[in-house]
Figure 1: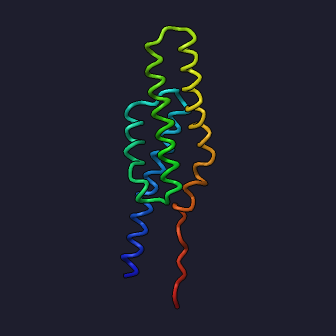
Figure 2 (figure 1 turned 45 degrees about the horizontal axis):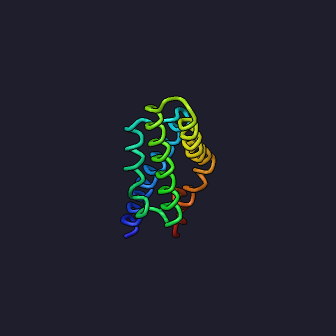
Figure 3 (figure 1 turned 120 degrees about the vertical axis):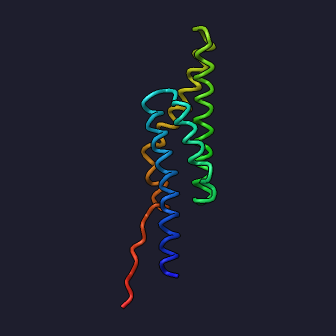
Length: 127
């Protein structure tokens, strides 16, 4: 029973860390360029889809909010590529920048948000 519990904790850690890694990879690319690649966005969306089963409601909601900001920024940047320079494009650029800045600002606090779920327990040995 103890071995089964340890195995369950190990498996849960692996799944949670995969979500953390998908978010970190996504934010890293968002910082490097305004528009992330479709592959990275898809990996991020799929990697965070099961968050509600792996984390508490607050972190799952946070990841949904991150997906919303990312998808809005992505949609605006794609739309802007077809716009002519002018006031409308400047307004769209400003809106996209707000979403992108929100994403960039999440980098510093990311580890703190995931820390409670990725801490390894120190088991006490029984005599």
